[in-house]
Length: 267
Image 1: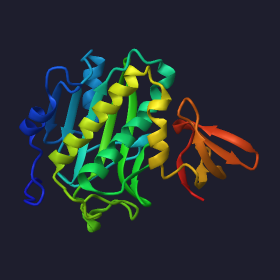
Image 2: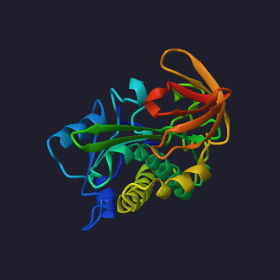
Image 3: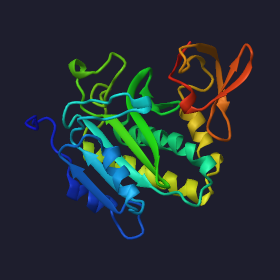
Image 4: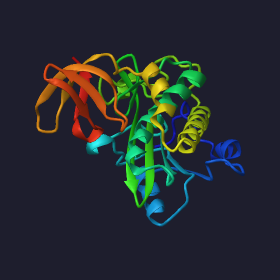
């Protein structure tokens, strides 16, 4: 399974040396050869009371999950597959949905900086290059904690794409496809943005300006598929204070939470 010489293993020692330090957010980084789901591993740790700062990465996930129970499958070592444990206990629970927007913003920013790929954020939880999906985020609440899963395609090849709309850093001719370098950049960016957000008591103003600037959704005409199979169309105008997407429809503004929608696509 792991004989592909073009896809070296993640260097756990390197990652720990770069990111696990006194006073830093990240306190433990584990790299697993294989697991059904990194989110499940971190959720178990959260339920057992582990403090925030745990990072679990995997070379391969046999049962990776995306939003709404969708599967996330990639060849071994072709992606960054990791989950982190956060406990923003000082932030009002009503503001926790902003984590689901803060994380893709951190991923997109890190990718732009270290890989020099023009990544953007698609509401509610994707990272795109133009209209191609580079990464997805899964946010789950477990026992007073937030478990955040990140799946970022790094060396996925064209013939390996799960669907035509997928892409990877390699396919986008990134400046680097070294997974440890990209992972360290993502975790640094996430730690910085998370700490600023917590220090501001979860104030959306910490996230919103840059999210707007990198958004592939806001200002666009969209077609939203709802869980009952119906659709609505309009213009994605802005985000509400609770992170809901405000779509201006012919019948007036419609605020939508991530759980209210199945797909958001260009109209």
